[in-house]
Image (cartoon, helix red, strand yellow):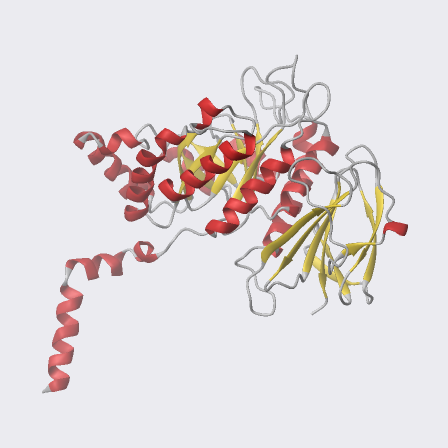
Length: 419
């Protein structure tokens, strides 16, 4: 009799609507995860088969989609899609008709195999965070498997733009605190453009450091949007291929799980990856390898990846020479260190990012911060080392606790302690 009652209860539970819904749609219990590290862009053409093929060949894996047809195109070319739609705004929650339309949109696209994220807004003021938090929660409740994407201002935004007060660090730290607490994002994205016509801005590493810290404190991945053009030729320069490599590898060393380029192709922007007629430029050709290297190395360093059965995380980021705001010197007792006698460095020196499953680093990314010249470096580790080939995604043992590296301008390498 007891067994019969047990079977009857299970049958009644299965007949309950919410149980049937969960059975029919397993995504209702799946939270968004980064998956393959994000390689994307800002401002590109409408997605056609030709454009999608070009993006896939360039090593991009996330395309912007203005409608469901473009999601179909992205899927055909193995790309993930970020959907833009006027309904993806906080005001949609205040209008019953628009909310109904939003619900219908989510119900349709959430099942699309190419959908990766919903684009909500670029560079919001802190006063918009409470409303955005409601929209993010609304989307997460109805479609937890896909990211609600928001991009933030850089450190050099004004107090008025940020909606917070104080000096650069104070205002930006408060902006990030309020964003994390009020919006509760699944990823932190920001942009920072440092290549001025005469020299570089001195806040690039400060911004990276502050975003990395905010993301770590919140247990979130982050994405860096970097400069790949000029929109103001009298003030900002077009980066060359070596400078773009420097942006890619410095972003990796700080532990990012995504990179985006401003811009792919856009009116009133010059030197971009692709011209408005679709012709690839020098930076596009350079990114064919850089994008694949970024994805390969970031995959090895993913929190979702494993080292001895445990997830990796960024443990520290250090500079051997640079002392700009946000740059921390390499400790003398660091487990991974550079032999100064074999690692001659100019004023910019090297960047070393350490990663590990515990407080003891097992992986390191070394970057040549001089984007004008090749550099030799000798990395010494706490045990026998292995070197990662980002082109083949294979590890090779050095059979010793040191590695002699030849780093291209702005380039880097990933190493780990042998298992």
